[in-house]
Image (cartoon, rainbow, N blue to C red; front, side):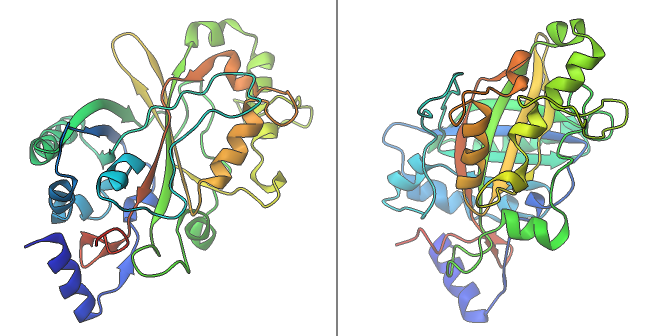
Length: 310
C-alpha cells in the first residue's frame, strides 16, 4: 500500500495525530545515529514509501527526521525547515553538513541497535546511501564525558511539549518537530589538564554539585545559553548523548524545537556573533558536523507525510 493511500485511510478513520514519542522520552541507555544522502537520480518518492512502514514510527525506539534536500527532491517544502548556514560575525567555525535523512535509534542493547540499523539501511538502499553512523551511550546518569550533567535546563512535562512540538500550524505539521544535530569532538586530555576551578568556569556549574556558580564568567556555557535570557525565550528540549570510538570521543548534540530559530539564537551567542564573547566550551571541544531536520508527526502508527505529499 502506498504512503498516500495509508494516510487517506487514516484520515477517514479520524485517527489522532501524535508526535514521535522518542522526542520527549528520556535519553536511552544506547543510541545509534544514522545519516543518509540521496543517491544520484534517486526516486525520493520511493524512499518516502519505505519510510511509511510501521518500523519507522514504532514509538519510543526510533526518531526520524527529513532534511531539506529530501524535501527538494520531492518538490515539497515545510515552513521553517532550512539548511544550516554560516553565521555572520561568528568568531569560531561551525560546520554545516546537511543530509537527506536522519534516524535516531534508541534502545538498551548496542548490538540490537546495530542489527536494526542494518535492516533500515537495506530497506532504503535503492534511494538512500548511509553517510555516517555514530554510536551513543548513557554516561553516569546523563552526564557529558567531561563529567558535567547535560540537559539540566530542559523544560519538563507540558512545557517540554510546548518547546519541542509544532502546534497550530495545520494538518500534517502539528505534532512535528525541528531538530538540530551536531557531533562535537572533545579534547579530553586538554580538559583534564585544567584546574577544577577552570573546568567549572567553562560550564558555569560545579561538577560536584551541579549547581550554577554565582561567579560564573560571561563566557561560561550557562551564561551563553540561558534560555530565559533571549527575546523571545529560546527553550528547547535537548536529548544529547556521549559518543566514542577507538580514537576519539565527544557529544552528539540533539536539540528539538517547534522552530529552528531558538537553537540558532543560542548558537549565535555561543559563537560570539552578538557581542564577540565566545562560549568557553570551545576551549576544549568543537562541532565537526551540523544539520537540520524536520521530524514529521505520526498518524495511525506511521509517519504522517500529509504536509509534503502531492
